[in-house]
Structure formats: C-alpha cells, structure tokens
Length: 204
Image (tube, rainbow, N blue to C red; front, side, top):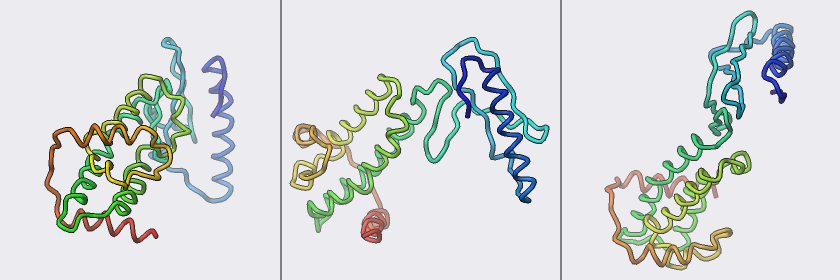
C-alpha cells in the first residue's frame, strides 16, 4: 500500500514493492496466485486516471470492493458495501433466537443472553475499528439495524437475559417497545436450533 497525492506516484512506489515481493517468492520457491491477487485504488477524486500494476509481466485484476479478512472495502472508503452485508446477516440469527425463546422448554435468560452475545452481536461488531470511520449515513444505517434487531426480533430481551450486556444502554427501551409490537414468525427445524445451542456450548 502507498499513500500519495497523485496516483502515478503511488503506482511507482507500489510497483517497486510488488517487484521485491515477487523476487522474494522466486528466491524461496513460492508461487503467488494471481487469480487471488487484486489491486484497488482508493481515492475521493472522481477524475483520477486508472493505474495498472504488474507482477511478472501480468496485471492482477482490479477490484472496486475487495474483501480482506472478512471486511469489504470500497474505493472511496464509505463503508457502504460492508455495512450493507453485515446488516443482513443477523436477521435469520435473531429469528432463531426467537424460536429458542418460544420452545416448550423455553430457553432461560442466561442461555438467551449467551446466544445474543456469541451469535448475533459479534456479527454486527466484527472488526468495527476498521469501518468505524465510514460515512455517517452508513453508520446511521448500521445503528438502525441494531435497533431494529432489538425492537422487532428480540422482544424477549425484556426478560432479565438483557441485563449485564455491556454497551446496550438503549436495549431496555427498545425491548419494551419490541414486546408491544406484533411479531412475525418463521419456521425453523429442530436441527437448526440444536446447532445454535451446540455451537455455543462447544466453545465454553
């Protein structure tokens, strides 16, 4: 990676590094898979000419929204693609939590809190320092999704399972609201619910 005012300057620096990495891989008998290598130019400029890097004479593909360690970046670093993705993930998980709360044996508050802390919240907050500087509009969207999950899908948080979860200052108010709203239901197999519980207790 290189940071520069002009894309051509950054290209020269990055190309020099790429050449060194390729030479190092050759010296140690390693093969770099070009199909798994992408280049991305991050810039706020709308009229910035494209630059092309090469490795062993071949240009790696260009990707506007590369994913690195589970984080999806975009070339303007707005955070929109990543936040859109993580906003969708918890929906089915919170539905499974609802299923757990409505079984005949009724999962107790401790189990429900463990499911929330270990199964939903990590998805919403994974690698948050990397995208915490995203555009305000996208962060607002993410916050609304968190509120929605508590308000609509986690109405059982009104029971004591909610207590003691750090960082959920607004949860009591949201849980109250959620407990008063009509809830939609979705069918889940016993195996799905069983796998949730098994996953939690296997990590203990």
